[in-house]
Length: 224
Length: 231
Image (cartoon, rainbow over all chains, first blue to last red; front, side, top):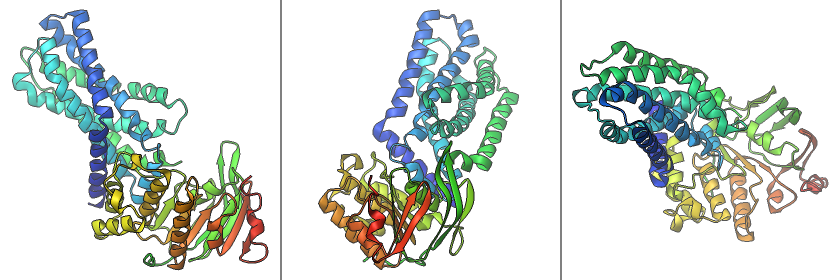
């Protein structure tokens, strides 16, 4: 309980500072919007093409946007050495990770939900009754991106060439999330849509495995 | 007068070594700090003062050797108050929000009351709703000290706490550390040359190349520890 209550306090701080500065969310939303609009006008896809290739494009945009958004999550703690203050205040460093993962997932989900109607309008597709399945896929995919991204953000923040390091590490590691999320979303957008539970299970499994690894070894990522 | 800590913490560094690449920050350092002592650490730039304090705070793990604490290391971190070069507070939050945030994290009893007490103590009661980024260096340092004092720490670590402070803020800081020393807390402070703060210390240590080269209590040799420390 102590872990969760401290993570909740930390999450409150993350949300408050973000909604005060609006740095991450606005950058991410604008980036995804630009990608979706540019692709829509460049390829001018038919409905069938949109159903087949649209989800891949959408998840690519989310992934690149996440690599932008995840970069500052630990870098911001370096400006005034607030990470040291957090490490002194919190006995279990997993609380710090849990809060950052929750905040990153929340910001990513907000971006995805804002972009969904824009994508549907520009690519002439409708989600309709499949919205719960789409939301579940978005949630599990976003958790996976945030878990891996937050861990790599902690590593890259202490490295030289940190701006280049995070995308270089993040994109290969998140390939399974990209492939599975895209396949599940494609299936949900077909004329005879269905939830691909095997894919959903894979996304959930990915999240649990990486979260467990972070719980076991997270402390070492924060050491100087 | 700050409240007395539950029990002051003593430290024992035993052949501690810390390297950054090929550079030794601490080298074969053996040092005992008694509970309730007020120790000034002097030395040139790069002599290992900051690393010593960060190792003492358990923020940096030594490569070799051990650091032991009287009463054990379990649950120790929240009992340590650390004031570093950086303020360790959030610019995007107000002074009060910063202190309440850290008070809740450290499970301070009645956090709102404790924060109000500290804001009054550091003279920031009137600016409690201002964002820290609008503060001067001296005011930021006051917030940093208030943050460090939130849990009524048993071990206080100050890394060149007077850096960038004007005369008024410096005098306030000296008086405040003096009160903390008198309340029985163990105080370790790194200093960049002799200053008013040095007069508070009951013991002075000089580091060079990551090791202790002089260690003296108040007396004839005391001032010599700080000679050339700022160079």
